[in-house]
Image 1 (cartoon, rainbow, N blue to C red):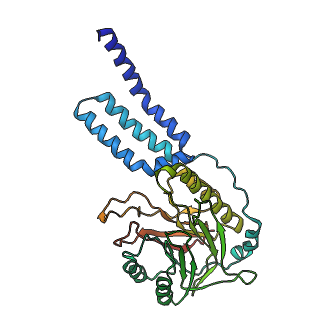
Image 2 (image 1 turned 45 degrees about the vertical axis):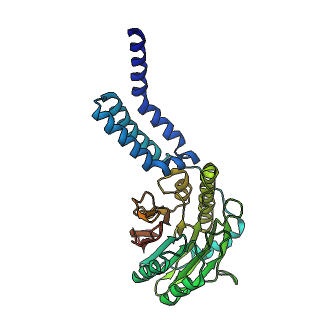
Image 3 (image 1 turned 90 degrees about the vertical axis):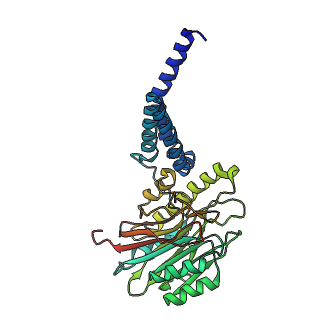
Length: 349
């Protein structure tokens, strides 16, 4: 290779490295509110770790242009991937039957005091009993477990809270869902005290929403949506799964808006972090706000402790609530940790 060719290649490389941050900025922005953006957010910790590795290597090798391009690209990509859009597409209304619940949500008297909610997605029985004991030690008002509909577990929580339990059977080996309130689930204009809404899911999946109006003893009625979005069926399903998660979040947001989101609390397994604009945008458009917490997944891999990456179990609350705190509860033998959220009535709204 002669000197002219070397000079030409060096020029092309320098131009490419110079343009790399701008390319990453626009590419991340274009993908941020799509299903591809959701997948990028899920992989973001690994991408950043790889970028940090290349950056350190470039600094050691004294490749200043490469190091600058990588550092600028990491900053630009992270900013563009998480910067909310100025405007959000308006939501369409949910099913007509949801309107019948609107009066119960809007006319419910404001809660009289703080409410403590716990949401936890479990996988198998390992550590489940110990985890439930840890949850009961902090005296919750509402407990929602995804991944199990075990009547024995529900009975233990129900007895401890002196309340009422609801069970949703699972259609797959991942189990169902159970919800327990320190009090009772209230009826709404009829004989029903629970309502179910199916969400987009894989064949024979069990993505769904259970809607209820639990009355927490001495506190009041809490309009509650218990959501579980669909699981991925392996790497070949990731693209379709990301679409199902976004569609499921959108259907949930439509339901919250139709019922009335001011006093609404949405809790459950969202499958993707709230930093994913595509998943979070419809929920924010409905009037709900995310109760930020520490990451709760994965706490372990193959039994070995691991650095948690994302908060997949989440609580979203309407403007009638103020988030006092939201944190994880340390447990063992499960891939996710429970999320504990304390809400207090927002007297300013």
